[in-house]
Image (cartoon, rainbow, N blue to C red; front, side, top):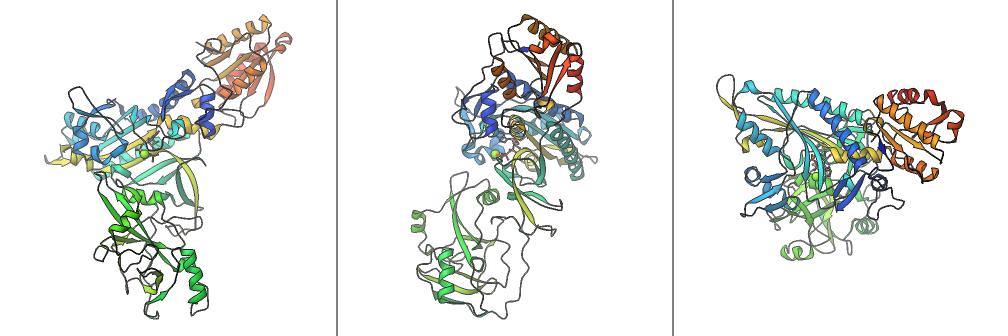
Length: 592
Ligand code: ATP
Ligand code: MG
C-alpha cells in the first residue's frame, strides 16, 4: 500500500531541533524519520523504520550470502558470563546495570561475545561442526559518556554483530576474509564513501583488526592514509616505528642550566635561545625539547595509577591514541592534589631524573618511539626554574618502555616507508577483528579435534552499526534542501505529488500510483487536498526520495513531470508513459 501523505504518521517540522548539531540529524528529525525520547535514545517513525529496514535487509543478504546464520540473543542478560570474562567490571560506567526483583544482577547487553560463545559451547562438541558463523541484528545498550548526533552515537542503538568459530588460526583467517568481503559488498551497496583502515581491537582484545569508516568531516575518528594507497589506519592504531639508535659519542656531558620562568615549551625555547645559544649556531626549537606529560589512569575497578609520557616538545599527547593504548583504563588529569602526593615532581620542570618505576617518583615512564637512543634532549631537571641540556637517551636516562600516544600529523612519514600521511575524519561504521581464543578460554569453549584432543576454539568478531548507518548515509548524501537517499535505502522508490484542486489531477495521480505499485515500486503519494504546492514540493525535497513525479496543471495537457531529487533535473512525460518511464528511471539505478 502506498504511503499516503494524507494519513501517513508524519509531520515535517520547519524548525531545527534544538539539540541537533549535525545537518543529517536535524533533517532526520525535521523530515519525520526519528524522534528523540531521551539523550541518545530515539524512536523510529514510519519513514525512519522503512530506511532502517532496508539497511538491515542489505546487511542480512550479505551475511546470509557467506553462510552466516541469524539468531537473536536477549538484550537483557545475566551477570555471570560477563563476570567470567571480566567485562562486568571492564565496561565500567558504560554498562547499563539493573537488578531483578530477587536482587540478581543483570545488564543490558553492550555486545554479545559471551552469549554467542556459550551457545556454541552448549551445542557443539566437535571440529566437524566448525567453521560456524552466527549473527544477529539487535538492540544494544551502552551508557555512552557523550551521546552525540542522534543515531550516530546512541545509548540504545542497533548493531549487527557476528562471530565466527574455527579450530585453527588458518580457519579464522579464512572466516575473517569472508566477512571482510561481505562487508565490502555491504558498504558498497549502502552507498557512501568509506575507507578500510587498520584498527585497534579495543575493550574486546584480539589481534588483526580493521574498521570501515565513512569518510565525513563530522566523524569522531581520525584516520591517516598515504597517497600511494598502501597504508590506511585509524590514528589510534598507527604504529610509529622505533627510531634507530644514533651515535652519541660527540655529545657533551649533560649539564643543568638555569631557565627561570620556563614552565611551558614556548617559554623554554625562548629562554634557551636568549641565554643558552647552541654551539652549532642554529636556533633551538620545540623539537629539541623532551616534554614529560603526566596523566592519571583510572582502572575499571577504580584504582588510580599515574603514567608519565615523554614526547618531543613540538608534539602533543593525542588523547584518543593514549586511551586506545591504556584501555580498559580511562585517562584522567593529574591534578594539583596528585602533585602533593608525589613531592619529587617539580611541576613544569619534570624530567627523567625522577620518572620511572625505579626512580624517586616511582611513576612508570614511557617514551614516544620517535625518540632515538643516542639523541640529546633538553628536558626538566626536576627543580623549579632548571632544565638539563644534552641529556642523552640510553647514556643519561632510560624509560620503562615506549607508547604509541603522540599525535600523528599531516605530512608525517608513512609507517610503511611509502610517502607521507594525510589525515581525515571518519565515522566508524563497521569493525571486524580476529578475537582469537580470549572468550573461548574464559568461557571454556573447546571441541574435539581430528585426534580426539580437546582444543580451544578461535573466534572472529564482526560488528556493523545499523542505526548509525542510517545516520551516516543521511549525513553523507544530504544537500542544502534536504535528505537525498541512495536508491537502495530510500524509504520509497517514488514520491508522487498531486497539486492544485482539480479532481482530474488527483485521479490521474492515483491511477499512476496504483500502476506503479502493481509494477513493484514503493510509493509515497502526496494526496493532501488543502496543502499548497509549495509545501508539498518542500516536503518532497526534505524527505529525499530519489524520484519525484508531479501531477499538476500539465495533466490537462496530458503530461506529468519526473524530477530527479539530487540533480533537480525535470522532464515532462506523457501521462500514458509516465508509469513505464518512472519504472525505468527507478530500475535504471541512481543516476547521481
Ligand atoms: P566507537 O568507537 O564509535 O564507540 P566501538 O569501537 O565502541 O565504536 P564496536 O564495539 O566495535 O564499536 O561496535 C560495532 C559497531 O557498532 C561500531 O562499528 C559502530 O558502527 C556501532 N556502534 C558502536 N557504538 C555505537 C553507539 N553508541 N551508537 C551507534 N552505533 C554504535
Ligand atoms: Mg564505543
